[in-house]
Image (cartoon, rainbow, N blue to C red; front, side, top):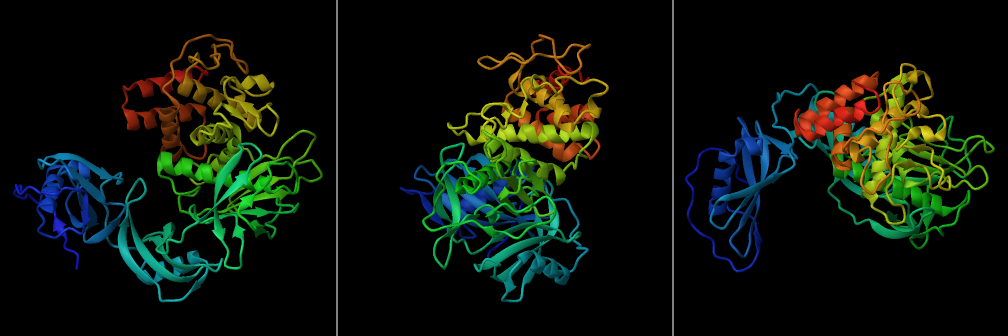
Length: 531
């Protein structure tokens, strides 16, 4: 049985360790390094987010050649395991604390009485498993702390065969009050196959695929929620959910890089776009998929374009899937470019967070949110074949973007500035207000080495005519502020003025009310006449 230690004052051990190489071994209960680490945790309760009811179990010890110690602990709260609460204590050879490593964002402060019983949790987990259960599932009450706020949950272990035929020992985490599935992972860590794909827009890319027992490979990303890329083969996907199958290939070398309504390369770009969008949200914000529940969903290429009348890409919450139509019109490419993929899947993120209603000013914010994050997905990818910019959809349209965030009005319809009637125009055009704001916030109105963005004067409506200088705060801070505003402060009917207030609150949370970032938020919104 693994020993547990409650954080309490301990006498600092003085025994030095003598090793000549890095050592990794299970720690003993009385190991001096464990005692030193526990002493540090007691002294650093604020940093470790510990408090009453917390205790720790040592899981691992590494002692470097220079005597530095790294002790890993699992955390428990009120005798419940804390999923995502582990902490590593790093000490110098002298025994003094160097730092703590943890991903816990908030100290668990919650009741441990569940609304649902374990049998109800098992029913929810069975439904989510989606395959044939072979052994009786086991449910353990726990604290789920991988998100922004710890929650009481059941960790349900389900063993069986998934719908795709693969064996699985899944952990399915079920909220102990609502019954919602919060997370999922598998103890059978099968290796994903790694293939290559020739895309339409970003050159040759690496794809995580699934090796089939019958031979060949499926375009299924087992490392990102089992996301699948399907070929609709011209079926109509606007009304209903037509049957489709995951794309398959014999040698795991996908596509030729050539356009066409039967091109396998459309699937390459769709799979790459999903993977990059997933990694962007995971890396930047710790978000596990579009709904933050670990689901990968599907991307579907070659949907009907209704005889050329509909040239589109869209996210559909109903099927939890991304759809791209066939090409339409001479010279236009498939709408599977990276920024379009990031844009459309961000509609799913918005739907699962603020839920901005798709009309009026909230609709413009909804569209702008997707443009902003689509541009940031492209920047995150850092792909030399598709350099980052603030243009949306220029690749499939041969350099003529759907929207230009630097000066939205250049398309002849979008608005650079806020004015009283901006909420009455199409949401794809009113989005220009927030797009323009974000460019100025991230890059500034006159960035060195980048295109200048005219600011708005008081009398300006659709077209900005000002020349004020606003200093940018950088795209990383700007993106962090916008995401927190979206997920924490915005609601379904947020307008532009309320979005300004939401971003000020978000920036104050992240950087402080008097910070340069918060002052930058105020200046950027003022630059588009939102005060």
